[in-house]
Amino acid sequence: MSERRPHTESELIEFVRSIDVRAPEELHRRIDALVEQSAATPRRSFAGRSMGLAPRRWRLGGALAAVAAAALVLALALTGKGSSPLTLRQASALTLAPAIMVAPGEDSQRPTQLNAAVDGVSFPYWGYRFGWHASGARSDRIGGRAVRTVFYSDARGQRIGYAIVAGTPAPALSGGVVSVQGGVAYRFLAQDGSHSVAWLRNGHLCVLAGRGVSNAALLALASWDGRGSAAT
Image (cartoon, rainbow, N blue to C red):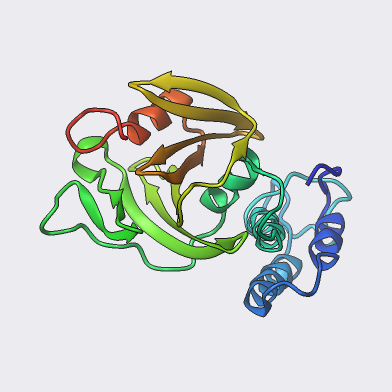
């Protein structure tokens, strides 16, 4: 994933379609659908008129951003066991990808949790405390491990993704800057307008990321365990 990033629609489509065809068919179908959706959507000028052919270089947005995220997810799905450690950028890919499942509801017995967990590690309910409500979810596999992601949205329309990777010990992670808070090591990364943080909960790798959300805001969410103290 170190090669030059595609900047145009045609470059992005070529990149997506050049990925190893041995990837899961379901992922290929998702990406093909996103590519077709993007190609079929007319581009609009600032005056609201159709521009016909897209310009040679333009910023990714809307459906193309989803294609880019799906392409990264597909590349991660091809990662096998015994490969090099995940980078924080790779681990954050699913938290920035599109939701494909409905959001889990609040746990009626545990008001600080949702009805969703990975290996007994529950996703938090942040509605009352922080104003972030579950808005979607997805399930994937990276390097043979199941990964579940829950997406949260706030009143301003911002979105963050919270991924929990199944299995212990947690996969090794590299990249970013490590900061220890309350005895927990948090690994931060800011890149391409997004902020990410990764840490361990009960031995499981957790990743929280979003665009337009500060490291301080992500840390407040990541470190909250329902009692106002740091996660462990």
